[in-house]
Structure formats: C-alpha cells, structure tokens
Length: 337
Image (cartoon, rainbow, N blue to C red; front, top):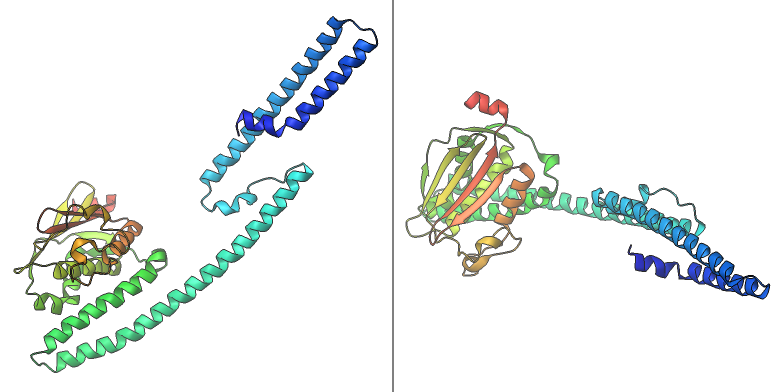
C-alpha cells in the first residue's frame, strides 16, 4: 500500500480535521484571541494529525506486508482466511466473513473436482485393463500360430500397447507417490525388460542393440523407469534410419549414475529441442507422417521430475542421446565404491 493510496483512503478524516481546525480558528479569533495563539493551536493540531496518520500508515503497512509474506509462503492460498485473525472493526469483520464464505465455497468446489478426477482416473485405468486383455490374448495367439504376417501383427500390437500404457501412466502420473515403491534395482535388468517389451518392434525395424557394462544398482521404482525406457525405445524405432543402432551405456560420477541411451536416428532439429518436453509438441519430425502424439517425452519428463531422476536430451544433425541421471545416496556409494 502506497502513501498516496493511504492518504486517499483517509481523505474524509483529513477533511473533517481541517474543517474542525478552521471552525476553531474562527471561534478563537471571534472571541478576541491573538493570531499568534490561533496559529500555534492550528500547527499543534496539524502536527498531532500528521503523527497520527504516519503511525497508523506504518502500522497498517507492516501488518499488510506480514500478511503478504505469509500468503507467499502458503501453497494453498485460498486458505488465507485460516491464518488471518478476526479483525476488531465491524466493517472489516464483514469482509472477513465474506472471505470465509468464499473459502468454504472454494473448498467444496475443489472437493467436487477432485472426486470427478478420481472417478475419471479409475474409469481410465479400468478401461485400459479391459483393452489390454484382448491385446495380450492376440499376442499369445500370434506367438502360438506363426505365419509370415504374424511378426507385423505383433509389432502393431506392441504399438497399440504403447499407446494404452501412455494413457494409463498419464492417469497415474499426477499422484506417483501413491503408486511408488522405492527399492534397489539393477539397471541392466530394467533395460533388458524394456527391450523385451519392444522385441517385435525392434525386430521389425532391424534395430541393432548394443549394451555396454550397465551392471549398476540404483534406488528407484522399476516399473516407472521401465515405462520411461519404453517411450525412449519407441521413439528410437519411430525416428530410425536405414541401419538403426540403439546403444545403452552408463557413466558413473561421484554421486550419480547416468544411464545413456544413444541412437543414430534422424535426430531432433535444433529449433525443436527447447520444446520437446512440452505436452502435445510433435516437432518438425513428428508432423511428417510419424504418428507422433507429443505425449511420450512429456510424460518421461513429468515422471522423472516426480521421481527425482535427471533427464537431458541432446541431438546434433543425426542421432539423439538421452541421459537418465540417478542420485546415489551414501549407502549405495559405500557398497559400489
């Protein structure tokens, strides 16, 4: 609150005081008092009024600044009435009651929205599980009845499974903490599981897989990491060249283990790199018949942020390198050091 704004709010008090000073001055002059005495009383009154306005201004300003600081530190700012004491003035109490009513209404609306989102999430999860059942049955049918065309069907089924997994993990990604089990996992095991999930896509694309020594252990949730790897592998297949290669390796630093996934695909244009984690962004490559949804890398980034995994992507002309950086705690460093 500025001093100018405060004075504008106090204009009625200032006006009443000046009228009172003028009336008193006229009365004193009319009763034969000397002008010196009148001016003295006038300036004393003016001084007291100035001191009063200054004290109330700085007191109110300090109180409002304190409220603003408290509000800045509050995550759910609609709960501000809960930290404000009931004001003493009657007019301020009316505004306080209005704020309390608005807060109650907002909390009820938030509760309704949360219930709706919960029901929608449960519906999506149930629907996806229903869809995955016939996909699994079709895969088993194709694997048990090998024909020249079944490999293509299996590759397409893996594609469909990728999209259903995206929808499922998108629904779950908002509350990973409710479906998050931290344990020691071996990166080599997770990488091989992700490759097995995409084996028909990889075979169909003639992708050459190179796996260096990645026998490193990290503490995280394996199913979330496997989903992230599935998205990365799917992108490598989608944006491959004629002789595709996918290379997995690890880099170990003092406090981190970095899983590097490198391909020799068509790469990512430099102008697209800053936006690849945006929801729905497909980029120049995705708009040229690659059936890109713009959800894969967005989900990877969102999940990595929630799981505390660093995610970086680099690409120069051809090929793309994606690095997943896992934090090592003191226990892991002691065991692996």
